Image (cartoon, rainbow, N blue to C red; front, side, top):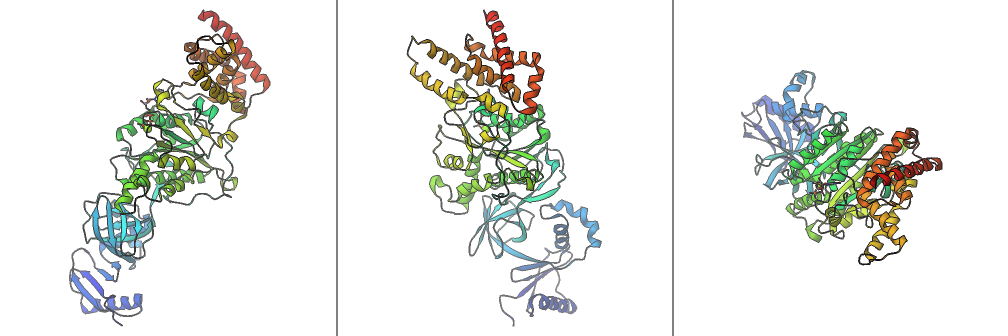
Length: 580
Ligand code: ATP
Ligand code: MG
C-alpha cells in the first residue's frame, strides 16, 4: 500500500543508483513493514552521505549526522558541537545504525520564542535541537503546533528550518567541581575559568521528596545575624522568605548567611535572577574576599539574558543543590529574586499567547514557585539525611505584602523575614520588622543555648514598640516605664549589625543573656555596642571554658548563666565608672 502521506524523500547530492535504491527500499520495508515511493531531492545539506525522510521521521546518514548520533550516545545532548573532533577517534569502535529522528519545521520565530509544526510526540519540557545547533525547550503543546523557548540567540533560525527532538528533558551538569564557580542557567561557566568537569547530569525539573522521604527540621542553620538567630531561627531544610522593598538589605542578609557557613560544611548556591551583572560580580567579590567562594556556586541569569534563561535558572540551581543533598550534605540555596523570576515567566507566557490572569500573570504562576520551593527538604536518614534550606527573596512595592506574588510565596514558605524601608533609613540595619516577621518551624531547630538566651526578647521588643508610641509625647514617666524604654532602645541598638560581620553562636548567646540580665541600666544608648563588645571580649578572655562548652554542647546550664551574669556585673561596674 502506498499512501501519499508516507512518501519517502531522499536528500542527497546525487541521484541514487539502482543498487542504492534497492537497499533503501529494503530499509523502508524493514522499518515500516511495507514499501513506499522514494522521491529524490537534490540537497547539499547532508555532505558525506544522505538523509531519508519518511513522514516526520528523518534518518540522517551524513557524516555530521552520524557523528552527532555517536556524540549523543557518548556524551549526552548537552555537549556542544566542539566535542565532535574529540570523539572522532572513537568512530572506529562504533557500529552506526540508522537512528530515527522526529523532525519538525519552524513556523515562526521571534523574541526568543519559536513555533514549530510536526514533532507530534514531543513531551513537555523536552529539549529541541535546531539545524544550527541552537537549543530550545518545548513549553507549549498545542494540537497543531508547539511553542518552544530558546536558550541561545534566535539569529540563525529561519522559517522552514528543521528541528530535531532529543528525547531528553532540560538538565544541568552537576558535580563538586562547580564549587567556587560562576555559571549560567545551563551550567556553562561564565567566570572565564575554563571548563568544569562534571560528575553527572540532573534534570532541572524533578519531583519534590515525598512525605516519607522527609524528616522534621531539627538542626539549626545559623545566619550569624543575631536578630534572625534569636527571634526567627532558621532550620536546615526550611524555606524562609526574605521580603521587603527595594534597597532594604535583602541581598545582604543572604550573603551574610553564606559567609557565616564557613567551616560548617554547608554548600551554598546563590541564584541571581534578572539582576545587573555588575551587582552579581560585586557579590562574588564579597564572597571571595570573605573566603566563602570555596563552598559556593553562583548561578546567574542576568537582566541581559533571555527570559527563558531567567525562567530556568532557579530550577537549575535547585538541581545542583539536590546533587549535594542526595549525597547527604547540607545545602543552602538563595533565589534572588523570585519577583523577577515571575516577571520573566510572565513575559514568556504572554509571548506564548497564554491567557493573562491577575496582574497579567498566567494562571499557573503559583505552581511555578511551589514546585520549586517544595524541593527544599530535610531528607530522612534512610536517604542520607541531607538537607536543602531555601531563602527565596521577594521584592515588594511600598511594603505591600498583599500583592499577588508576595502573598503566593508567603503561603508556600515556612515564614518570612520582613524588611522595612523606614527602619532601614532610621539606621536600624538589618531592617527586620519584628512584628511582621515569623519563622514557623525553626524554633524546633534552635540549640538549647540559643533558645534559653533569646528568652522573651521578641515579646519585650513588641511591648517596647507599643510603649514607644504611647510615651512619644509624655515628659514625666515613672521609673519602670523609663527602665523599659532604656531596655528596649538598648536592644534595638544591640541588634544593629554591620554587613559581612556574622556573630558566632557563643557571641550571640552572651550578648542576649547580658542584655536581658542588665537591661542596660545605666548605659547610654550610644554606648550599648561598646558595652556588648566589651563584655563579650571580657568573658572570652577570662572564661574560655565557658565559650568552649556553649559551642560544643549547644547548651547553657544555670551555672553557665551565672558565670555570664557575674562577669557582666563586674564588667558593668568598670564600664560605668570609666564612662563616668
Ligand atoms: P535591591 O532591591 O536593589 O536588590 P536589596 O534589598 O537586596 O536591594 P542590598 O543590596 O542588600 O539591598 O543593600 C542595599 C544597601 O544597603 C547596600 O548598599 C548595602 O551596603 C546596605 N546595607 C545592607 N545591609 C546593611 C547593614 N546591615 N549595615 C549597613 N549597610 C547595609
Ligand atoms: Mg538585592
